[in-house]
Amino acid sequence: MQLKQIARDSLLKPLQAVSGIVERRHTLPILANVLLEQKDGRLYVTATDLEMQITAHVDLPGKEAQAITVAARKLQDLLRALPDDATLTVDASGSRMTVRAGRSRFNLQTLPAGDYPRIGLGEEQLQTLTLPQRDLRGLLKSVEFAMAQQDIRYYLNGMLLVIDTDSLQAVATDGHRLSWASLKVAGNYQRQEVILPRKTVLELGKLLADSDEPVTVDVLANQVRFRFANVELVSKVVDGKFPDYNRVIPTGHTKKLDFARPELLAALQRAAILSNEKFRGVRLVLAADQLKIICTNSEQEEAEEELDVAYTGDGLDIGFNITYLLDVLQNLAMERVQLAFGDANSSALVTVPDRDDYKYVVMPMRI
Picture (tube, rainbow, N blue to C red):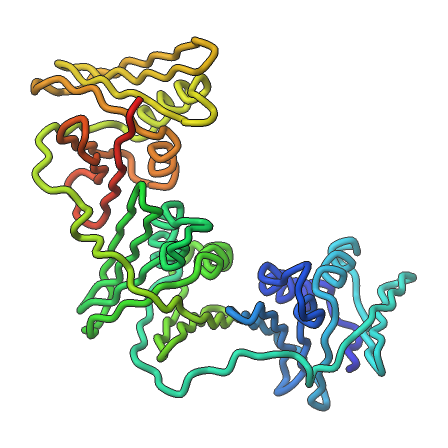
């Protein structure tokens, strides 16, 4: 492979787009590499962890098709360390790749492109939908924090995507809280559910832009493909049955409070400083026209915040994991939120006033 007089960013930008999924330690050494392919007037950079595959491309005219694999992290670190305006010459032959820039020269070990494992695309394409990148990015961000991390119920270590008629819904739960969000999409689709792995969701969140540029979502038999800008991401889906989330979302809660989200968030952040580091408990004490936020810890220290609220119902003293409340307030972009309570043993419901496209359920805890 020969690449002559190319700008540093022509190689660095697609490399940065794909290298997030590269594992540093893996049983297959070649998975620490990226695949560089020059064909059809473009340079394609591909990375995979066998569950997900990302390919990014840049326009780079070349005379013949050629391919090689090279260590992803090393090449990325080298390119980052070069001046922004550096011009590169890349020459790969045998088991070595030489990168030259000005008076700098680097020799990297390579592995044959033919040995690089690829995720083959499924034959059967079930549905395709297109929406702005900003919308999909916002949908994922408002839900992803509720995903489980290493739960034995493997289907919780991911996010449920539901395509239904003219909406795209996302759901995540770790068994202690649940986040549900929905957005309208153009078209009329059959109902379909897929569970995206946690790593795929987080990688999409990094790659999607906050713009109206389109992203196309292709649902295949046991895969989902996302295509946007110069990136294609293919992911396997989690084979499992997601719990019935509609049964978890409470209805009929009568104790409802409206808050300015930044004000409630700031009060909880201050109180959290003196919360118990292990249990992270917070008491919400509701009385006429006021809400008290109380945190204590094992050193007998206490934080108390008092907020004015428009409330005239029965009093309530209920406990929660304060981290679960902070998560939802930090990840929502809306200015106002509504909290609805039942009794001290019932889940709380967080919604956005005058909107029905977001719901967050959090279980109470004994304090």
